Amino acid sequence: MRRGSDIFSAKPTNGERKEEETLRPKFLDDFVGQEKLKRKLRTYIAAAKERGETLDHIIFYGPPGLGKTTLAHIIANEMGVNIKVTAGPILERPVDLVGLLSSLNVGDILFIDEIHRTPRNVEEFLYPAMEDFCLDIVIDKGPNARTVRINLNRFTLIGSTTRAGLITAPLRSRFGIVERLDYYPPEDLFRIVMRSARIMGIETDEDGAMEIARRARGTPRIANRILRRVRDFAQIHGGGVITAEVARQALDMLEIDSEGLDEMDKRILRTIIEKFGGGPVGIKTIAVAVGEDEGTIEELYEPYLIQKGFLSRTPRGRIATPLAYKHLGIPLQGRLPLFE
Ligand code: ADP
Image 1 (cartoon, rainbow, N blue to C red):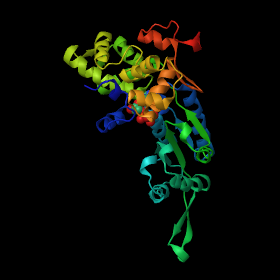
Image 2: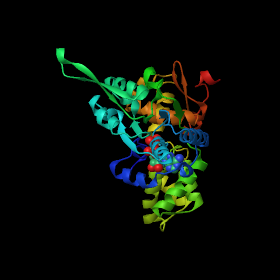
Image 3: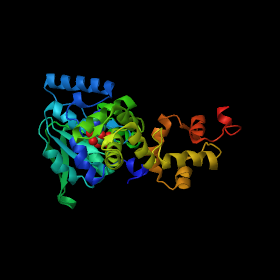
Image 4: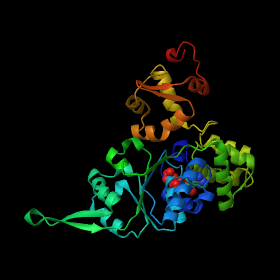
C-alpha cells in the first residue's frame, strides 16, 4: 500500500491518469468550489463569446492537484474550442512549438503545463506568437540565413505553474489573466469525494467521506487518491462500505494524521524544532537535514504547512509555530523567543 508521501506526490502516476480523466469535471457547473474564480471565468467566457473574440491568455498557479489542468479543459468545453496539451519540459527547442501552434484553429487553446520549466529560447519564441500571433523562423545558415514569418490563427495560451515566482517578468506580462488556485476547505473536498465515489461506484457514507475530506491536504487529487486506497481497505476489512471508522483506520495505515500531515511534513517540523531551536532556518538547510529535494519542499510540503499555521516564513528563514509544537506534543516553554 502506498504510504503518505506517495499519496501526496505531485503528479498523477500513469495508471492514475486514466481514472483522473473519468473524474475530471467537464463544465464549470461540475467544478466544485473556487467560487470567486469560477465567477470571474464565467464573465470572461461570456464576454469573449458575446464579442466573438478569443479569450485572453491565462495563467493558473498554485500547488499541484488543485484543478489547473481541469480548468483549462473546462474552458475549452465552455468556449466550444479544441485544446492541445503540452508541458514546459517537453518543449526542448523552438521547433517543437511550430507544429503545435500552426495546427491551432481560431480560438483554440494551447495548454502548457509546468510553464515555468519552458527553456528560455522556447519561451522567447512564444512572445511574438502570444502577442502578434506570428512566428519568425530563421531558415538556412550563414549568408543565406533569412527569416520567414508564419501567421497563426488567434489562439488562447493557458499556462499552469506550481511556482509562479519562477515565471519570468516578460512572459508573465503577456498574460491578461493571472489566477491563483487555493487549497479547498473540507466541505468542498467532501463534495468532491462524494462525486468521485458516485462515478466510481464506491459506497461511502457521509462521515466516511468527511473523514477523507478532512485529511486530504486541501487537494482534490489527494482526496481522490485516498478514496481509492480507502476503497481497497473497505473491501477487505469493512464489508465494502466506507464509514468514518474504516476511513480512519485506512488513513492511519497510510500514515496520514488527523490534520492531513504525513511523515515528511512531521519530519520537517520536528527537524526545525529539535535541530534548529524552532528556527529561523533556511530552506536549503532544512532540505539537507530531512533528505528531501528543496523544490519539493517548497512546492509540496511548505505551502500546506503554512496554510495550516504550522510553519511561518520570515526573511531570516522558516519558523515552527506554537501550533506545530502543540500538534507534535513538544512542550513550548522557553523554546520560542520569537513568539513570546
Ligand atoms: P493540477 O493541474 O492543478 O495539478 P488537475 O486539474 O489535474 O490538477 O486535478 C487533479 C484531479 O483532481 C483531477 O482528477 C480532477 O478531476 C480533480 N479535481 C480538481 N479540482 C476539482 C474540482 N474543483 N472539482 C472536482 N474535481 C476536481
